[in-house]
Length: 446
Ligand code: SF4
Image 1 (cartoon, rainbow, N blue to C red):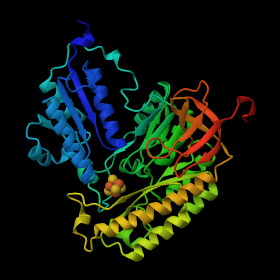
Image 2 (tube, rainbow, N blue to C red; image 1 turned 30 degrees about the vertical axis):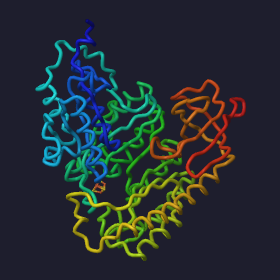
Image 3 (tube, rainbow, N blue to C red; image 1 turned 60 degrees about the horizontal axis):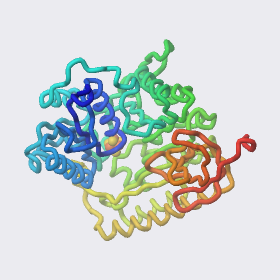
Image 4 (cartoon, rainbow, N blue to C red; image 1 turned 180 degrees about the vertical axis):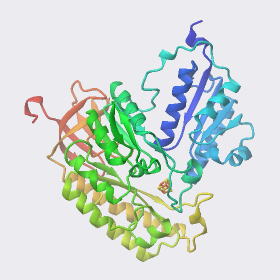
């Protein structure tokens, strides 16, 4: 019997957002480092860890179903993640789970695994790649720079689940980024609950990277990441004035000209009811200023329609705002109450039929804006990163498309291109969300 066959085997189910995925990667890295084997089969596993999401009701149901499936098909289940912060909800439906821990509870998860399934002797630590175990393809990786959140948006329970803002030391973040780049990562996706708040809890203390001082602050971190020679994409940035400092780095090619800003609404009254961060400024003026500095900037955002108290006038303001902002990529959710959220106590809930109607109207406008912005790209040239090649078509992304949330660039006849390659293409066509492109022959590239 080989060491790998003898190793205790853990099944792992990872649900939720990229931040939860990073937690999963950390736990998997620890498991592998201690010599456990990770298996994709319930039947083959000695124990299953389920990393849950508890953000909205749908996610809660999905997590509870996943726990139920793991119990039915394996029987020995440890639960962690956001829903783990509400253990009574899990226990009432699944009393047989062995242990429940909350989010980012790496030590507790490992202790629970040790309790149930002793680690093998003399683990081969060098079986674990230096960059850790990643669940994303080899060529891109999420880089989580902070945990928790200091805001109190009324529809959200993340601060209650994950605690206040806790930024990672800047040197540690940079070392992880360097390891990822050395391992072949071509694109770093920077995430936190509020990326722009990075380092506020540390009072932006100066750390060290490569022997040089570096402040724990979003602009300085972004500049340092931009020196690593790979694509760097910022997610979950709020429209604070200091974000203006980051846009010139995009114009200079140090960062991808892409910002994911969760605006959530366009009516100041609703933003106040939501208690959204950075809601006081004139966001349309800020967007105009950003585009003046970096015309190729792509803006992605998400919105909530049908928030309690949203009047017809508020909704009309949202549509006007969207029309004027001309965002490139937009996602939208109908408001749904989350157990424990302050917004549940707000008066004037919007009836479901009105929410549906507003959602349809919002998405119709968003699709038209997206189609118009994409059509303007026909004939232009861009660099793309190949995500995969299937049946003679390469699916790629340009700086304007983030993985998993935005559209893709389809390239027919991709030649010898493989996942992780960079190429230059000319955009030849679009539909509402995706683009078609052809390769630019090397001789014609600039
Ligand atoms: S910024 Fe608001 S929505 Fe985002 S995690 Fe913090 S409280 Fe929740």
